[in-house]
Length: 171
Image (cartoon, rainbow, N blue to C red; front, side):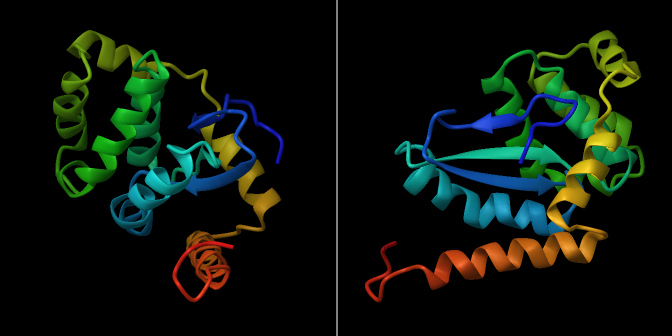
């Protein structure tokens, strides 16, 4: 799949032989569950060993998810961005469902070194065409709605499990 208007978020060796593409929304419970349960295993067994790289493509379902991805991109470097994504998924219940999501996101952003001014400047930046990228990427992946994204995730999980040998290792 071709890169869209925003540069891909690549975790792992960009030259790894296998590419895993995840379309994620920061407010999606299934996506948070993937990052809590499946991602650590995939990272340990495949990404950290150089067998695969993970590309995260923004698929924000709502303005809160869009703001979270914008903040992750505004951190300034790959390591901080990846850490911000991890924290946002880990603390999803605290900010995504908060009465004042802006205040909750600011508290998380401060952990990454944001000030009130840099937080506001980041969220007021209208340049990142994340919604356009989401729509184009979703169409390319055959995703038309949230349920399709969840089913695509389940298919990938099933394919991964089906390719394992009886002793639990991959072929």
